[in-house]
Each structure stands twice: as C-alpha cells, then as structure tokens.
Image (cartoon, rainbow, N blue to C red):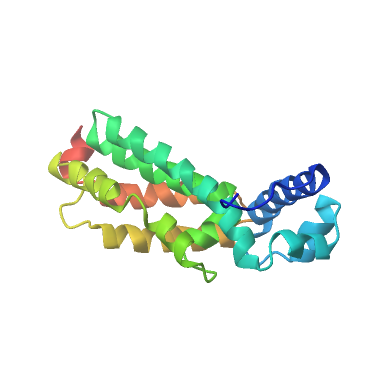
Length: 194
C-alpha cells in the first residue's frame, strides 16, 4: 500500500485478495488475454469491484506478476549453486520452461506476447547478469557449445513458448521432449562422452 493511503475496509481487502488469487489462477490457466469479466465472476465480485481495485488490466498484472517472476530467482540461485556447470545450465532451462508450462500468463509475460508495463518489463529482465553467468559457466566447463549466447536463450524461450502454447490441449508434456532435443543439440562432444 502506498504511503499516505488509507487501509482498506475488511470487506474490500477480502475482495482484493480474492481478485488477486483468482487472477493468478485464471492467467495461469488461460494466459494474459483472459477476460477480466471471468476473473471477477470466479472471484465472486462484480466487474466494477475489479475495476475499483485495479483500474486497468496492467494494474492487475503489476499486482500479481512480480511474485510469479520471483520463482525465477530460485531457479537461477539453484543453477548457480550447482557444482556441475552443465547440470546448472540444464536445470535452469528446465526450471524456466516448467514455470512457463505451469503458468500460461507467465509464459505470455516472458515472451512479451502481451504488452507489459515498464515495471513488469524490468522484472522480466531482472537476473540477466546471473543468467549470463550460468551460460558462461557451462561454456567454460566445456559442455555447452562455445557459440551459445544469451540471445540464443531468448530465441529458445520464444520457441519453447510456442511449443508449450501449441501443445496445451493435446500433449501438455510435449515440451519436455522438445527441450531434450534442444539440450542434446547444445551439448558439446566432450559432454556427450561424460
């Protein structure tokens, strides 16, 4: 809550909490273009109540996605802590795509499929130096192709996003097979021998 603002009444606070929980669930299921009316209906409030708390769709994104993006911090930390640089890299990529597969709104946010506010763009881009370190460690360890860069990772994220999006209904776990193909192609010959 911003400094100088009055605390919400108990019923208003409950409605706000219901809207946040429901929006998180609906965006995870349907992506960022899910209708706001559905969020209000599933939260058991009117669309007017939703707009009273969140005047724009972007305000609702701003309220829920920083917490969702924080899950990436844990994946990054785990990857950096892994003593095996290749396992750290592969674990990071698998963790990232698992998040995308589990939360279609996060998938949309990470691939910029939906226009985001400056704050959310910044949150999506946070951790870039750590991700570069994950890539560099795996390259220097001789197990990741030396020509793989963070720009390649961005392209991989977009490609896997399409796989995840396309397989939602028919084969929700198909992304894991595709990721195995990608990782096999990124390993060096030295990694194949180990």
